[in-house]
Amino acid sequence: MATIRFTTHLMRHRPVRALQADGATLADVLGAALSDDPLLRSYVLDEQDRVRKHVTIYLDGQPIRDRLRLSDPVGPVAEIYVMQALSGG
Amino acid sequence: MATLWVGSRKGLFRYDDGPNGWQVAGPPAFLAAPVSMLLDDPRDGALYVALAHGHFGCKLHRSDDRGATWVELPAPAFPRSDAPDAPALELIWELAPGGPDQPGVLWLGTIPGGLFRSDDRGQTWRLNAALWNDPSRPHWFGGGYDHPGIHSILVDPRDSAHVTLGISTAGVWTTRDGGASWRQIGQGMRADYMPPERSAEPVVQDVHRLVQSPSNPDRLWCQHHCSIFVSDDGGESFREGRGMQPTAFGFAVAAHPEDPDRAWFVPGVKDECRVPKDGRLVVSTSGDGGRSFQTLSEGLPQDPAWDLIYRHCLAVDATGDRLAMGSTTGNLWVSGDGGDNWRLLSGNLPPVAVLAFAP
Image (cartoon, rainbow over all chains, first blue to last red; front, side):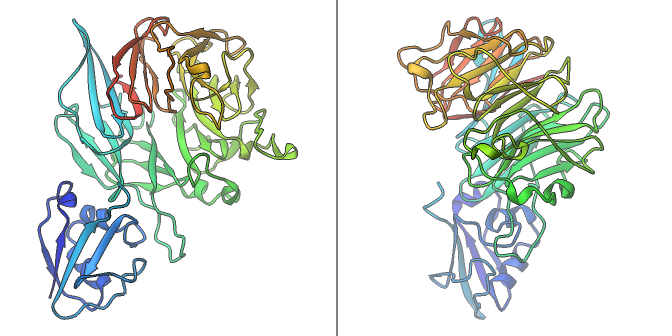
C-alpha cells in the first residue's frame, strides 16, 4: 500500500488529506488514489496525464524519473509526496 | 448602482459605484491566485472566473450568488493524445456568453489556440474540432506567448450561430453555423513583422484585440500589432484608421454600446517598447469610425507613467459613459463621462489582467 501526501498549498484549493492506494507503478497508484476526485487529479496532472510542470513528486524520498508516463515502479510499502515546485510561482 | 469586477495577478476585486462614488466592495476573492479571465453573464447573472495557478494549472469557478460563494467547474481539456507534444491548456484567455436564445451556452478561448463550447454553464466543455483541425493551424504562431491563443470571441447579437474570433496570431475567423465550419476573413490588415510578400496574408495578422459594436454588429474595431483597423462588413475586410494619436500601437479597445462610430484605445510606443509615449498615459478615441482620433488625458498621469493597459483591461459599461482602465502596474482608473475625465481609483492593485462592468 502506498501513502500519498499533498503539499498544504494544494490543500488550500482542494480539501484532501493523505490517500492510500495500491499499484505497481506511480501511474497505477495515482490513478487509483485520484479516481474519486477528478478536480484534484487536474491539480496534479494535466489532461495528457503528465505531471504538471511546476509540481514535483517524490517517491520514497527521491524525485520521480518519468514525469510523462509515471512509469516509476512502486514497492509494496511506499511514501509518495506531491509537492509544489519552487519554480512556477 | 454599478459594479466593476477587477481580475488581477493576485485575485478578484469588486468595486461598487454608490452614493459615495466608487468604493471597494468586500474582501477579494481568490486572493493570491492569478485571474486570467472573468465573465459576468448578462443572461442569468452567473459570474465566471478563470484562474491560472502557477503550479496547479488553469481552473474555472462559477458563482451563482454574485461572488458570495463559488463552485469549481472542470476546466476545458484538450483530447488525449500519445504525441510527445500533446496539447494541454495553458491559459483561459476569453470567455463569452452565447446568444440570449442559447441559455447555458458559453464560448471559451485558450492558449494554445483552442476554442471550447459548453452547453451547460461550464459543467462540461467540448473542443471545437473544426477549427482545431483546420489545415492552416500549424501555421498559426504565438504573439507574445509561446503558442497562439484566442482572446476575442464575438457572438453576433442578430444571429447566435454567427461567431467571429480574433486570434494572436492567426487573424480573424468566422462561423455562420455555430462552429460546424470556419472561414478565415480579415482582408486589408498589414503585418510589418513579416517578409513584405507575406505581410497582407490574413492568417499572419496579429490581432491584439477585436471588439464589435453592439448596435451595428458589422462594425468591428481591431487593435492590431501594427496599427488600428476598422471593419464595416463584419470583419470580411478592414481599413486602416487615420490620424491615430499619439501612436497606433496598443492592446486594448472598447466599443461604444450605442454609437458604432465611437471606440476607445490606449496607445503605447511600439511592440518592443510597451510603455506610454513620452511617459504620458493617454486614451485615444475616435467618434467617426476611425477616420480621426482625439487624445484624452485629463486625470491620467503625465509625470511620467509607464503603465501598460493589456487587451482585456479597458471596459465600457452599457451606458457608454462609464469607462474603466487597469494597468500592469496595478493602477485602476475610472471615467464617468466617456473618457473626458479620469480618476485614479487605486494605485496599489496587483497587475490587472481583466476588467468587466456588471451588465
